[in-house]
Length: 398
Image (cartoon, rainbow, N blue to C red; front, side, top):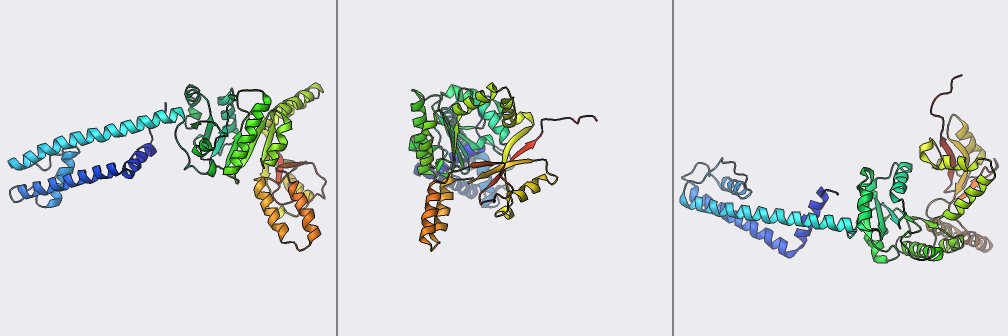
């Protein structure tokens, strides 16, 4: 169970100030304090050294109504003491009401958070995961390990998992701050509650809770990507498919990265059947715990227009990262196409424009070019594919 945060208390105060009843209540409370302070000052002034000015009486009123009771100033007249009794009752009632309201608000917020009913539409630059996996805890832990810059509080899950499953997920100390939206990730209103409009990355999983066959699961994935791209064209969207025949629909929806999970499993099995051990190699490069991993890194802007030979020599010069190729057209595919279209429109050559438009139409995101020739040119929005780290953790004695 998560404890109420300072943000929850701040949200309560904002909610109170936004309501007309809350504002009236605050104004009445302030008026009572000022009136009580004025009466005590008029009664005690001149006969009580503790009330030399209005601020002294106002200080005494605040201390009394908050039930602190320092005792540095005490009314001596009957009228002053009667007012003190009224202020004491007012303080006890006010403090009880305020703390009760705050506790009720925090409890209500806690229950909504557990049930996935809170809105996260004010988040920015976060990561949304649509759908649910059977071993979601293991998946999220590995994802956080592979992405050390990603904080659990930046992750918003949107799915139809039961609150008990989410609570079990959050029982992991590492995942306790993960946010959850209960809903259907193809519904626009649920995506908006998850803050899709300001999200930086969105992952659409082949949902475990989608009823039906593989085609129905993949159809929902395609609809989710279309909904996401309609609400946020700048987000980087990755989707998991079970059947590769739906891949073309995701490309038409400008999905930036498509993972064919069943096709990948089949490819691994085929590699294993060859008896060459390549499945172990691939798994070692994908598993962060092995020490070595395959990843992509940014190339310096000065490398644009250079040849692959220049980049390869840059990596071989005292760098332990092993360059094995290039990844072209990285980032948001729709943004890349829009930029390429603007550049094409500046060309006065009609024949050249037609050729460029065809290439823009066929543009694909994240195209790997493995071990190209040294003369291969480095294009814009290209990253280097490297193997970093090592599976050897101790020095080998000579």
